[in-house]
Image 1 (tube, protein in one colour):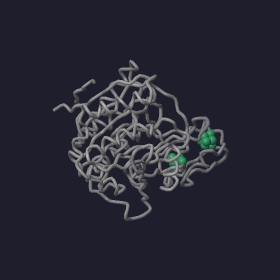
Image 2 (tube, protein in one colour):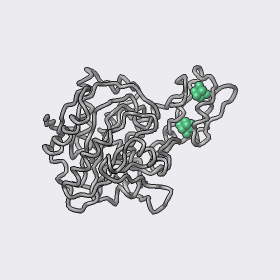
Image 3 (tube, rainbow, N blue to C red):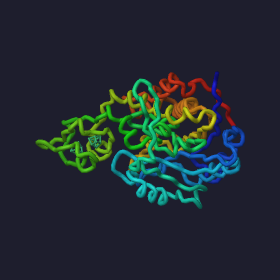
Image 4 (tube, rainbow, N blue to C red):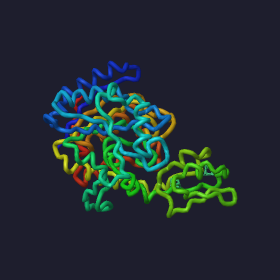
Length: 355
Ligand code: SF4
Ligand code: SF4
């Protein structure tokens, strides 16, 4: 059966207030939050943006969403888990401060911000998955303990998964640092020695000390590498590249992690995709990165696979080509969706309801 995906178009020039009015209309007409019940704890899973990044969803849009949750009787809170790699979101205190700096304070965003500290055992939960790659998913407990989940995802390109949307926000985004590592650990970059100038920038940012400069060239100690991609971001000559052949596995592991998060929330989860400010790379990059597509619009669905497929299709329609493949030729992001469908997360077949 086709899953319904509601869509409302947004143009590049539209104001924040205009977009907020559209979010309200989308939520009202899709009745997306009908699953929320009185006094339910509702986690609004969002990305607060790495320092220097500007692609993340505006906190004033989050406010409209949190107010709609409250209107249904739910108690919302905004949340994201910490990152694998060095940066301002590596631990909960720094992450929360950065979220505040990006405008995510209760008064502006309409809800408390909770960043689970996964160094504390009580904040971690192991959820059995027993699929091809993941036996037990390591998740921040807060996402499992909440009664309902609303994933608010920025739809954009991604160096490893082709694009990132709802599946990535939930699968990778709700994992503990150890869980993120489990999804990345088959993925080590490779050094293209002909481009390496031996500057050592990669070694400086490597969180595990996996890189040494030997005879003027970068060398990776693979067993130490956690596949965080920080070295690629730091390399000025693009000498550091991912082993793209392993990216498929990360996509499938990510889908299995998303299943772990959502399997206990049947009929208690909703998804909103923002195909605005569509960047080449994800909001984890600590820098501005180029826009690859015009603003397309806002999507709402109860199906995480269908919403990502519809977002993918409409962004590509606006670009007149598969812009994600054109941007990241070695990745095929559709693989995460095909596998997600295969393991029962949702359907690639959707009915688009244009508002
Ligand atoms: S070698 Fe690169 S990808 Fe591996 S851990 Fe170090 S910085 Fe991360
Ligand atoms: S940052 Fe790039 S160019 Fe510099 S040493 Fe590392 S791989 Fe080589």
